[in-house]
Image (cartoon, rainbow, N blue to C red; front, side, top):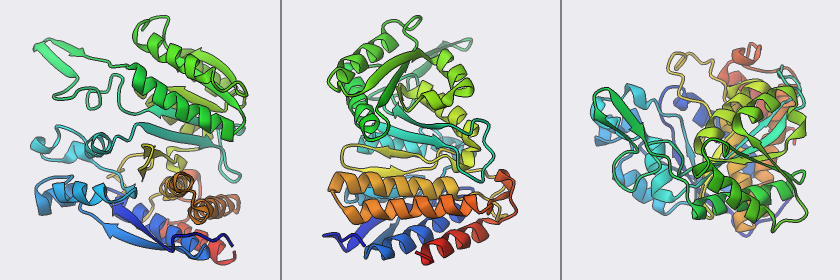
Length: 360
């Protein structure tokens, strides 16, 4: 059993909308059980967020929630269904508000096929490192206002932003990740068309990667990369790319691995880590007990691993590893929710994972 200098770990919990009230408690139950095995106690700080916070605080991300997160380095964010919010609360998504406030510049999205889960590409095991603050997304590229605007009712424009500083920052995260995995980094861009913007991103990533001579480094245009992920995913290890490309490629990779329902994701800075499953709120199945909690569980596991690595806390890292192993073993035993071809409810799957943890 690993020992830690920390016996109590504060963790923010923002349940969110749709299936959030089902999958976030499931993930936290598993996290609690895994943490206890490492003599680590989770001190949950539950915070208003999403549609419920609009009803109680007049804002999906109340200032009181943001102030509480100022004092936390680790939190779990449930899905949000901002499309269903009243019009006055749709200006920026809740996730964008939090990412911007806390400078969560790196979005790490692994895609791995699991035994027991039918995958389109069974040999996929890739980590997509997505720059999370710039690019073409309108909620991430302006100091004030939006990156989209309409000079006339019939013309819509968008501003894409790429900077040397942000590109260098994400390239270092990707290089470090590749060094910890299989030593292969692929830079994805579209510099043959977006010459100045994604060309700058490519060039800066090349410069940073040159500082890591132990890595194998190559590059792909984003359209070619999408085809290669389908045809030969096993040839790729860590992929670094800008915001929009990373969003599209990571969703594709998740489906190739089996389902968005198993797609883990963390958003992080150099100090703060937020677990956030890659999928949405799925309001059409909310409250029916059939939601798949795997992505949320694995996102929490990733968050423990990364936060523990930042703090050099072996108990946190080991907690993340225990969660990942218990989830993988449960899937391998053919226990799965309906979206993965199984019959387990969200609660039944969670109980099966907890049983794996109890067995050590």
